[in-house]
Amino acid sequence: MRILLTGGAGCLGSNLTERYLDAGHQVLVLDNFATGQRGSLPEAHPGLTVVEGKVQDRALVDNLFAEFRPSHVIHSAAAYKDPDDWLEDTRTNVEGTIHVVEAAKAVGVKRFVNFHTALGYGRPEALPIPADAPARPFTSYGISKQAGENYLAVSGLPFVSLRLANVTGPRLAIGPIPTFYTRLKAGKGCFCSRTVRDFIDMDDFFSVMDAVMAEGAPSGVFNVSTGTGHTIKEIFDIVVDHLGITLNEPVPEVEPGADDAPAVVLDPSKTIETFGWRPRYSFEQTIRRMLAWYDVHGVTAIYSHLKAPPAKA
Image (cartoon, rainbow, N blue to C red; front, side, top):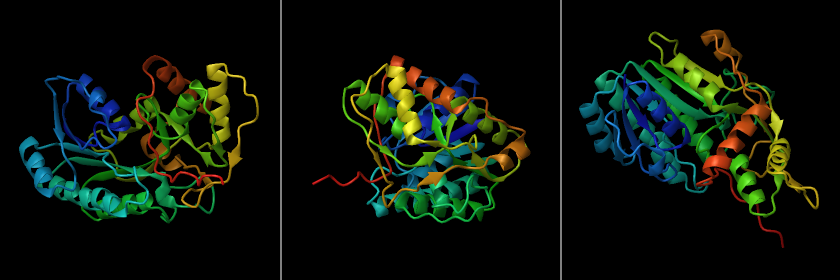
């Protein structure tokens, strides 16, 4: 395959890049390195081309597609670093997606895989959330990502859009796991939001990707999740146990902010039925595998799509 991967220096993108290079495919990575790390990609590999740039640069995107002629596109690029920067989210997640979609159409790609956020569902009426649940995003990140998916859906491209649970694996730089690990190891305090989320191991994500990238695979929208929800406090407790820490007092728990959803758990039954796929790793295995990776490699960066809680008076 000739794979053009936007956002290829991020956690998902860099892990996929390594996987596809090892399998002998040609990969072109486009990344602006706003959240992705250049060091996450191989320094020199005959099958890899790395281009620094933005998906909202229409001329650049068109030129890359025309020159590289990808057979497959994986669209992982996304803006989420500043929840108040609506214009940046729109330029990247909406306009940028449109540019990538239209360039893919122009060269006739065989497969377009889009990564979407579970936050596109907003605050769900019931859990777990089926793939046909209504989209009701209420944050800039969720709204803009949902709009990008909507444009892809009407493009006529052979596409799959994966609505992702929290994928954990090498170089994870977002969410409670690296935050708790870093702060607790440094002797700093933490707090837990009273929220429920679903988590899935990178290897289980890989097996989904193998299925959706296969020749003749079905198109459409699919949830990627174990289907089980867990509290943020459960993650905190596992990190405390992993690090062998004794707490002097219970960790504070706070209500979710206005830009957060109390519970988001995706129903993967459509994915399981369509692709014959099943996750292998339990919640605790997933978290502990992530922590073991941090023990060896450390945490290089931490980002969040959520606003910081207001400071106490």
